[in-house]
Image (cartoon, rainbow, N blue to C red):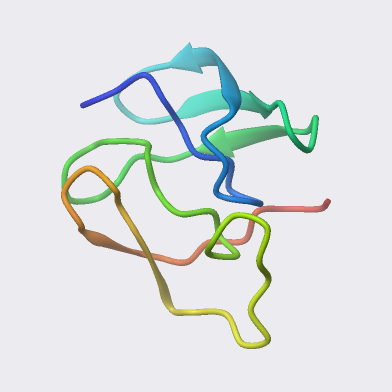
Length: 85
C-alpha cells in the first residue's frame, strides 16, 4: 500500500475521506459527490490512486475503456462498475 489516498470510483476525484484502509480494500466517501464507495487496490502495486471507473474526473466516456490507470506506477487495472449513483 503506497498511500492513504483513494480516488472516487465514480469521478476519479482524489477529494475523498478514507474511513477504513487495509491491504485488500478501502472504504471512502467522495467529498465532491457526497457518496460512499468501496475501493480495491491496484493489482500491480497495491495503491488506491486509480482512475475513476468513468475515466477523467468530470468526464463520461461514450464507450468505457476496458482498463483504468494506477497513478502510482502506471499499471492498468480492469474497469469495474462503480455501483449505483
